[in-house]
Amino acid sequence: MNCEVCQLKELEVEHFEIREVLRCILHTIVFHRALGLVRPKDVDLELFEITYVQCGDVELEKKIDERIDHFISWVEKHPNKKSQICLSFYEVKSKQPSWFTNKTERLYWEQWYVNLNVTQHPKHHSSKSHHTKVVVDPGESAIEERSSRRAMVEASIREVLFQIIKFVNEKKDHVPPISEGVIYFPYEITIPSSSDSAFGMDMIKRMLHSGHPTMLS
Image 1 (spheres, rainbow, N blue to C red):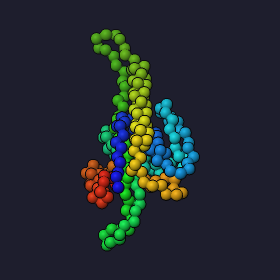
Image 2: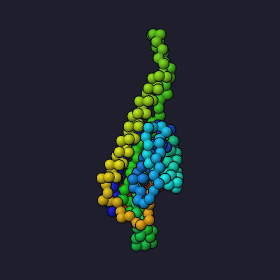
Image 3: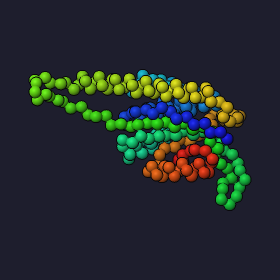
């Protein structure tokens, strides 16, 4: 089975923005891959002037929030590192049982990589020139800088959302047949392991098992 992979544009965010940004992106992807009847719910971001759509499924929201919590915990243990979260869609297929394999396997047909660069915003301090009597007021400068940065992040998020929509509209041939009564394709959300080396080994093991790149939960 062909597994399509979408590497989303890297977003530079601060720690307090992670939750909102990931909710927006992950829910947008799942909504555009929903199959059956959903109850679309518009959600306004609190930090940015952006509205996205959720499927209106409480269990889906809970699962996404749980994975985001795990991702934030990983980020806190690995500060100032670029990080990645992966949303994979798959099919469950039966296979010939043997003494070393399970009776079912996951065949991954689409993977979305959300790339974040979590930064620490520098604190602003008052400053005086030793050579003149001019006092620089950091308040107004800091506000302008924060406003400019927020606009840049907001524009980047919009780019990612358009990237998602473009990918969904262009990549259709690999999507498996729809089963009657199914609302969502099976999916998993994976985050880095406790160490980079373990993360790499997880990827290798899954590649050997399934035949295409994935990440372990």
